[in-house]
Image 1 (cartoon, rainbow, N blue to C red):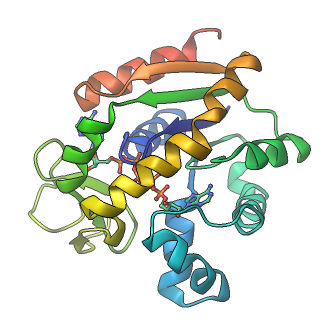
Image 2 (image 1 turned 90 degrees about the horizontal axis):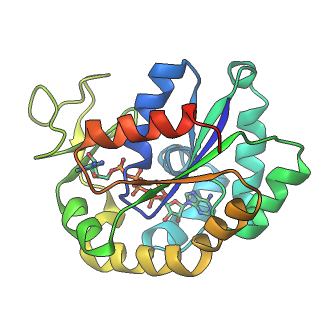
Length: 212
Ligand code: AP5
């Protein structure tokens, strides 16, 4: 199954991608994590992406399309995958179509902006594997340590309130048009992401099982 998770920054795409990945045994591909990894390694891609990410803007389409194309060609994607954070512009969605990638379902995780701003202040992410936690809603077993890889949990640079506000504006302007794009294609299901984590996961799994 090939799935796209759409939603504002902090809507829960990364968290839910992990749940679906385990349930369906398909990999989750996060362009945000790939770009952060490239920055950590100091690659040319990472250096080019840095200023966009830190200011809450989107990285240029051609850079992101290149990395996701390469990732989807890996053998572990043969049985399907979950796209977390891609596509994010109509141009990226069109590129995906042109690559001949047949998407089965697009799940929009809907959360109001006010709830996002509160959520982001409690988020911590693993420096090692990128896993996402929340100090209250989804805490790790041991404080400050990733359950999956024992990595250190840190606050993401772009989670400061001013940058979150910018990311939300970018989302509404450049990414929200994709809701309409996939609605017209008959692939979209919207779920309420402003409910407890487990309930949101159950709603997504139901939406994946149901015919669109
Ligand atoms: P990216 O890393 O993709 O960030 P994002 O889309 O802004 O999304 P987040 O990772 O912030 O949030 P999420 O929806 O995954 O939420 P999470 O599960 O962590 O992108 C970063 C940057 O990279 C972009 O700004 C851009 O510059 C660049 N980029 C990436 N992809 C690109 C592309 N395709 N094109 C161009 N540029 C690109 O959850 C958030 C918090 O809430 C966590 O603490 C979690 O525990 C908690 N939580 C989750 N669900 C619930 C719930 N139901 N109830 C309570 N708390 C919850």
